[in-house]
Amino acid sequence: MRMQLIVLLTVHVLASVFWAGSTFTLARLGGVGAEALFRPQMGAAFVVFLTGIGLWLLVHSGSHGLSEQLLTAGAVAALVAAGIQGALRRRPALAHRIAAGLLLVTAVTMAAARYAG
Image (cartoon, rainbow, N blue to C red):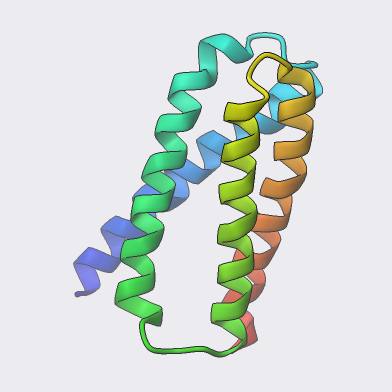
């Protein structure tokens, strides 16, 4: 289980860093270059969600404490961010600015969850 956890966490963090980092950059650039990064970003988001589910099953299954509540809030914010990036694809500046805020919320809740329980 320890190796599974290490691999899942590593892939989750790397995909998250790419997705959030490129979103923050595109938000700052007013969406310039967003079309070229749309597929890689959505691919990273998909990997983030799959590995997040795996991490939840390995570490948090059956628990309903503050950590799990924070992780759930972060996951919902990330899902909404991905949805906005897809729905507002024709308005990349707006899409990435909103998604960047949501991914910031996600990062804060994920970090806080580590120390909440």
